[in-house]
Amino acid sequence: MPIMIVLAVPTFIYGAHAGSGVLSSVTNMFYTLSNVSNEPTPTPLPAFPTVLPRVGVIEHTIGEGDNCDAVLTYKMNMLGASEIFSDTNPSTVQQLGKDVGLDCHRLQPGMTMHLSPQYPLVALGGVLLKIEPATAREVLPTPLIKVQSKEEYAPDCSHGCLLTVRITPEVKVRLTVHTTLSLHPGAWIWTQARLARKAIPNFPNYPYADPNASLNGMALQACDFQANDTHDDDSLACSQLDPNSIDTDGGSWLFGVAGSNALDHWHYKIKAPAGTQILVWLQEHGGRLSYHAGDPIYRYDPATRLYVKL
Image 1: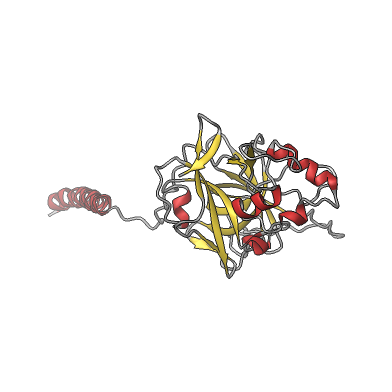
Image 2: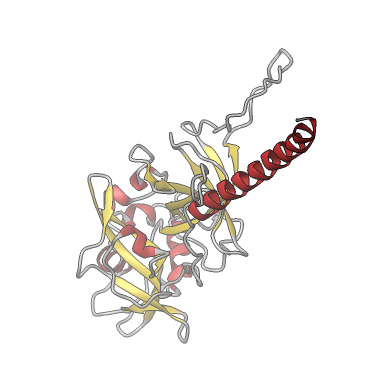
C-alpha cells in the first residue's frame, strides 16, 4: 500500500500538468483558427489622386459687337459682371483688362482674350491631420484641473475649426469648416471649397483665383462637407460662402480631377478619363450644386496651358 501511494501521487501530479498543457494548446489553436478579435477592422482610406485640380483660363475669340460685359455674362455665366467691373470704379475695369489681356474699350473682332472662372470652387479629398479652433481660445481666470478620461476628445467645430488636410503625400491645405460632426485626426475628408482669390489692393470682391498660386498650404473655405462616410447636411452650402456670386449667377465654376478617388465622389456623371483636370459649370438649385448634360465643361490642355472643351 505505501509503495502504491508513493507511485500514484507523482503520477497524478504529472498527468494533471500534462493534461492542462494539452487543453491550453488545443484552446489556443481553435482561437487562432477562428481569428477571434473584438477590435473593429478599420475602413481603408481612398487613394490619393495622382494629379491635383489646376487653376486655369479659357480662350475666347472676340466676335462682332462683343464687349467685356457681354462676354463675361454669356460665356462665363457672370450675370453680375457689370457691377463687379464697373466704369464708376475705373481701377476695376483696368484690372479686368490685365486679366483678359485686352483693353475692354478697344475690342476688335478676331482678338483673343483669356477668361477666368469667377469665385471658383475646388473639389478635394484627403486625410485630416490636425484640428485647431478658428478663433483664439479665451484665457480662463482659474487654473485648469486635469481630468483623466479614456474617451477621445472631439472638438466642437459648430462655430468653426481650422483643419489641416493632406490631399497628396506632398501637399496639405488648410480648411475653415463649420460642422457638427465629430472630427478626429486620421479621418478622410471630402469637401468642396472656395479657392483663395488673388489679393488686389482696393478691390475686396475681386473674383479670380491666382493661376500661379500653389495649393500647398493654401487656406480655403469649405462647403458641402463630409467626414468618412457621413455627410454633414447642416454644414455651409457653397452659396453661403462670402463673397461669391452663386445666387446671382445661378451656379458656380468648379475645378476638379476626374476619377473614382476624386471628382466621381460627387456623382456628377462627367465622362472623362481618370486623372483629367476638369473645369465644369454647376447649376445651383435649393442650395445644392449639380451638373447637367450640355452645360459648359472643359479639360486642361498641357500643350496650350488652357482649358479647352471636353
